[in-house]
Length: 458
Image 1 (cartoon, rainbow, N blue to C red):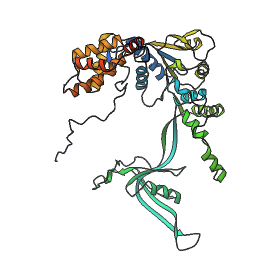
Image 2: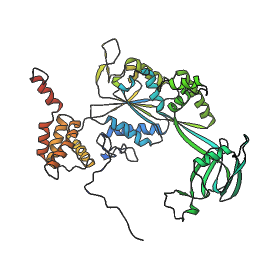
Image 3: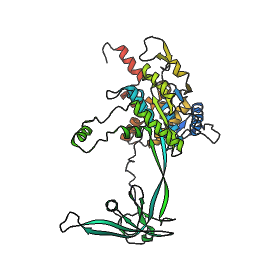
Image 4: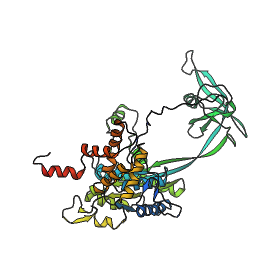
């Protein structure tokens, strides 16, 4: 066979975007829950990662529902990265809802309602439904016509005969004309593998039978094996939704087909406040499904960054929500020390900007500032991620900036330094590129010093 392969242009740039936490792949723990020094995109913060690993184990064993943890530490020490790593460890099936404290203040809905909405986005429900279906390869598809009951010369489809074949036998089905419309929409032809739901009549085309795989077909086609078992069978269908999805589905106006009802649906605002009464009714139905074994509750993770932005009213509501029988795992993050709680009348300062009654409920995970060796490893890893080459002297100078000013400032300088070295036709970032960036861009301390020396703004 002739070998044909595409040749990629070496000068072509990678189209994938690089975000702040693109490199995070997990907590980087071994099988005993001990943090490796460099693993999963993390460098350092071993005690914090091991603490989060215990939280992940509690979540997986379903012993953490309705509880909360607080990630506390200076800016740029990886609090958001730890929350994302927890989500990576839990997998894509567990809901993860990240928000910032300021997101809850909205003119459209009450702030407490916005908090509860995000709460319910972080609670998953896995519904297991057993349906009766007819499944097989289509061996016959014959619509049968009858005289139009309204008169005239036209004819109408009275029913359709569909023959289905599986590895165990064949069946001929007489279907309603409405199902024939679904068959036409799915573009089903003889040789396709389909299944038809017995209760609703819904038709789903699975693919083309692999018996036709040797056909010369220019179109991209998915070939599937002939279904096993009988044509008529019971099939378990698993669907993952969140409680917020159920709230929205039940809050959406249904209405009738008259003009007033249709106008009411059009005039209804896009974002409506879901009442507590509706949520309680949804919870009641969900609890009934769980008791019957039809559904399984999957508590996800609600991550609230900058939790010190919340006010006393939201903190009180958060305490109540955590005591609910259906609640997610709440991960909070704050980079503040002793500070006043927003909305409180007194000037008493609280730790991390949270009221004492909430602090009592929290498992607090502390993040520490990085030392110079860890900072060098982080900058080096970030340079590799951004396809930049950096000299040892430039890396050392950027690490000094990270220790003296902040890690974020040093990482922000990395890309401009890469552009300067590229413009100067150098293969790697040198000290002169870092020095030029120091002249072009001020750090926080230098900016404050300039403002203190000047009479005006600058």
